[in-house]
Amino acid sequence: MNLKRMIINSILLAIGAVLHQIAPPLILGMKPDVSLAMLFVILIFNREYKTCLAAGIVAGILAAATTTFPGGQYANVIDKIITINVMFLLFKPFRDKLNNQINIIVITALGTIVSGSTFLTVILITMGLDAGFSVMFLSVVLPAAVVNTVVGAILFNIINVALKRGSIKQA
Image: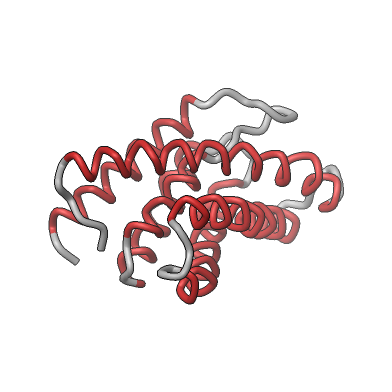
């Protein structure tokens, strides 16, 4: 893992955390997880598992620090670690076969669903949910997946242009 790559990943995670903090609640008081979209951008730009795992852990800690959901601190850390592992394994065979535009859309949509399901499962086990799992999944996770997919695609294109202009190659 080189220093330039670590610095870029750190900046992307920090931007994701700030955007997550200032994002307004859209759906039933729930905010879309912009830091999760940024984590998927990092996943596309990095090929090393340990880099992606480190980014997932840091993203989980940052999301835990900015969450407004009761009991969401533990759930955010656990869900980001599980999500990055699942998505890294799912994405690995398709990394070089599909265009990155398609990759970011598919990864962000599926990854947000995996993340939301994991988050809700951890909350259900540790704290309990007032509404049922399926109600929360349908009313919060699926709309958040749509929002995150759009946000992730926009962020990916902005970051991709910036990295190309800065003559920084993808790993």
